[in-house]
Image (tube, rainbow, N blue to C red; front, side, top):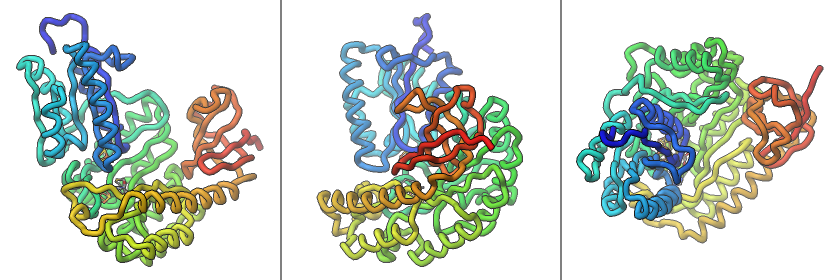
Length: 445
Ligand code: SAH
Ligand code: SF4
Ligand code: F3S
């Protein structure tokens, strides 16, 4: 790095968006550490500030622009600060255009993260901004160094990109075509994580059900899960996201058979009306989804089913919206992330006529949330008195006197206990239920 500086430069990474970005930020940290940077305790001490951005909704982009403005004024006082800008927003040409006037030193994309240290060195040497974004995905580059926060739970990529092109979604444009990591590489990573003390892994992909397509060896997602289940030291395995169009019986069987696989499936429905589902290019119907729910509950009794839901997709009528509410009532999701449709330029739905006014979207979101929260509360109340296996994560954020933990179904349980329980799997009895969390006490037979 900088040839004149003697002190190592300090970096800080600002991460926005989904788990993929959280994982990418760990790789960015690893790359920077191996090129001699140290992590800054605080943003104000950082010599290098890296934005790892998300463009899934307008609100996500706005947060980034707000923070960038803040950092740019910091840079007026300390002109030596370097700003690097990567992630999904950086893949979009219209965003890069805007960045030209924002004091950014390095722009890098989702496909060339591994080049970051070199791009920073170039910007320092040339004393002018370096924009280097690959339009297309290359080969999967690995192994890359990575700097994970020490802890219990780790994210592991099993695949990158997406081929589904749901008409509202920018992800296929920012993450490129779907490709899977080799099973051996994934299993090796799980073994390393186990050796480092991690107890839980979440396998990440935009559509994990199609894991294995394009690999030389014949491998399906279910096969990978059986192999992952046999890694000693890993006690819980989660995965996200499952596309409802292709959840196979073999996958459901694997969840039923593998004791480490948690009984939780995130299978986003998005909308309840067939007309809207079709316009979203989701490739399934509400009837298909209801059958899937039956199959999931048949193979895995008590399985927790969670969803993402969008309100106000272009052309969504009151009747269409009522069908979403109807599906929420029929399925009774354990939890759902709910969003107002956000127009993303470059996607097909952005061109659709009949965009829904913001006020209407807000009202639908409120009605949907009211129903979903009520259902989640009811399901949680049914758990009162039950015994749940939880993984103890640490002190509770809201009450540090207590401990926070998670059930296999991914519910938070707060309880009183000694700190030496952190990192262990124990049983708790549920004593009280709220919408987003449960309270309990240690259960000893
Ligand atoms: N691959 C995952 C999700 C990726 S994005 C899947 O298919 O489920 C996470 C969620 O953001 C999506 O499930 C969707 O509900 C929401 N989302 C994506 N694009 C959006 C948009 N333009 N407006 C509102 N919500 C959107
Ligand atoms: Fe987006 Fe659809 Fe791909 Fe999910 S499956 S990332 S919603 S295009
Ligand atoms: Fe994730 Fe946002 Fe990109 S949700 S894949 S960081 S657009």
